[in-house]
Image 1 (spheres, rainbow, N blue to C red):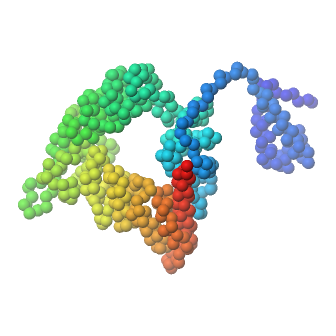
Image 2 (spheres, rainbow, N blue to C red; image 1 turned 90 degrees about the vertical axis):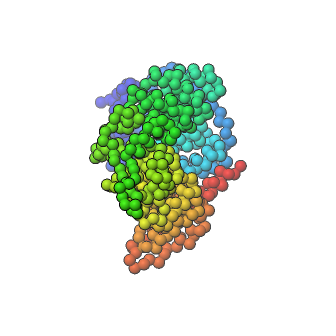
Image 3 (cartoon, one colour; image 1 turned 30 degrees about the vertical axis):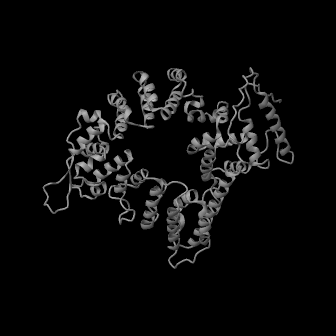
Length: 543
């Protein structure tokens, strides 16, 4: 019986997969088709693989030659120093999870250092080695958090490659305008033509670039087509006005309050409430003032108390100004409306309404009928929206207060947002004081908003708290998140100060078995990572 080869357009199903399986199992356990066990089986397997390879390659039908792509664009930036290029290759070769999980040992986690390396390279304006662009795009494909910095560093050649490989098309979607060149911002005709004829991504990129350069021109350009845009596009375009938002934007935003789309109306109201001098903010202040007052019925010598009378209805005027009438599940309607009014009212309202008191004095006042949490939470949101550092300080309270957090902070997330309104030095000092009083158990989210590298007082507070946890004899695993942050955020100059923590400490009687060794390992990894970060910075600084 003779075998006939399959026609080119009907390859044998699974033939190649069967040969691969045989190779993986070994010919002593599975032999190739038509061959028995014995010393000839491996040779037969290789012969069959060679025949199948030729057949697979011949299975492509002739086709017209594709148009040759245009040459890759030039990248005018200076090339990376050789040592830095070698370091980048090492960072890109490391893959998340390559260690197999479990105990990390003393080896630095290179995948967590790549974002920091990219930020430093971008700050210095370097261009990547062309041969590393595929690995860089693969890394960005697998990690969305890397994409902005990776694509900035990769530059125009990455977009050229992305048009040739479907696996990298995310780069075109992630780049405003899909990598298309925008007209010069002084080219009025080019701007007008792209705005009228461009793709949506190109128009978003144009509006964002113009808004950063000339806010009024961007707003006027948007107004020319506003009435004919789709609702979802109007929402995206309106969001661009957050950049350099100012009083001149108020008339346009007031008109958007009557938009057909609820989401557009809500965004317009939010932007107007971030302008304390706007008419909407004044209307919200009147409504909020009607809900909050000092109780004048108390005895003269008693501590003043804030009373709250939440609105009994959400009228059309409130809805037009952005108040959402339907409360979420589990929330009372009146408290829901009340919170939105206070959040949108200018914070300057309350000193005038509550007897000329300062924010700190106002926050310290008792509030009747269990309204304190709702009122303070709304003030927190207002402080974040209006970027009011004085109110943020009052709501945060002293970091050494007996209760973790301030009187108005309802969650760690809220505290982190309030800290974001302070400058970097003050933020670091507050978090350092919080850690010194409360330890690290609640500090992880707060550390995430601090500038990198950490200021010396904050770095010392974190290391001291880790040292205290080590001396307590518990395992370090509950502090692995903070330790990971320290590896990325602690100033590399702190490495020498940590050398005293590398030895295995004497374990107290009630210590967890072997905890001292785990701590020594964790501190060794921290020191090794800090020194690696210092080397990375030095390599990027080498001309």
